Image (tube, rainbow, N blue to C red; front, side, top):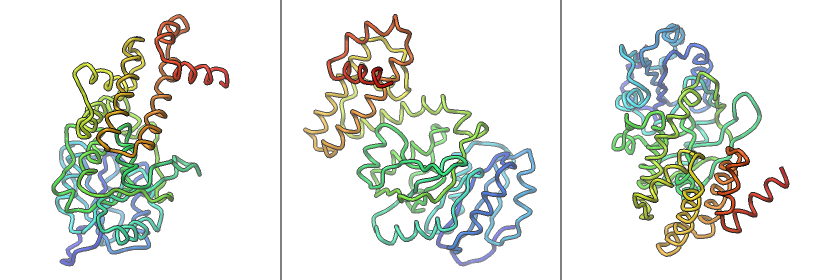
Length: 330
């Protein structure tokens, strides 16, 4: 099924799969039905033991390049394998349980033509099997700011400049947060952009890797988050690192004193950002306030009444008011 053409396509679609028999046919069809058709479709099978191979082999399209690995080695190694043989100028990521809308590649190439310094272009997506659309930042500076707190690029929606990926590969040590780690390293090498329209139907079902490994993902995100703060020259002493770890890992078991110190550290981060002119202060302070508000509310929601009173009295007036308003309007 390998394409023996000597000409190089514009896009190399790279789709890893492992026991993906349930949804992979729909995923393949959605790629083959793209309005832009100058691409190769590299499917790397990470040692499936179900009917995945049989389903892939049922497609006779010459653009499909099928690679079967004998031994399962995980998504990062599988992606690096696909990228290493890609011929295209751009790498389009795809997952074996999602659906790309027909104009996805066409729209992403339009954006690459507009922004000459662009290296990663993602999009919004429909969530699960609904008409609900996720919310992601559009422009580079907003994406970089959001990466301090969460992964704001949808992995299976992105198109990436291949020459950048060849120099900055997926890190095997950060699975299942391999994409978040990659964005936090690539964000300093060129511009990012999220098209503000859904170009993908994203599945987050009970068997997906995102759902199965969510706790492990949170732990990996801690190290990635620390890297981002250090990269931005924001103070991360051993003591403050513990509070950032609690924040990144959504650890609501910390005591009231640690919660207070965590909030104070973020106030110092606001000052540091303003002094060093890293981000627009208004935007930075706004997003810091939003994520801290969510953290504080979740912290108190997770605790029994008798364990809420002491931490509450340690908070400054602003956060006390946030909690009072939350419970009054609940």
